Length: 80
View 1 (cartoon, rainbow, N blue to C red):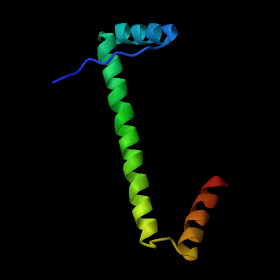
View 2 (view 1 turned 45 degrees about the vertical axis):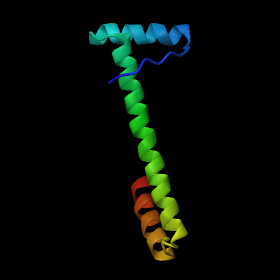
View 3 (view 1 turned 180 degrees about the horizontal axis):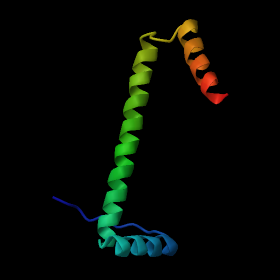
């Protein structure tokens, strides 16, 4: 099942969408739908991770100083 959504977008964005759709051999609707799906997946993942982190924080599940230092050491070794 699908639902029609109506929205206003900048003319330049429509032009870019049309160029992309043409180069892909797809419709504008297909490109917009794919973009929205990708955005929703990404945002849903971030919200899930934030909620999980908040649950861990509420439970007092924090990294201790040794764990934090180990991660910082690992990344500072890669930076140099």
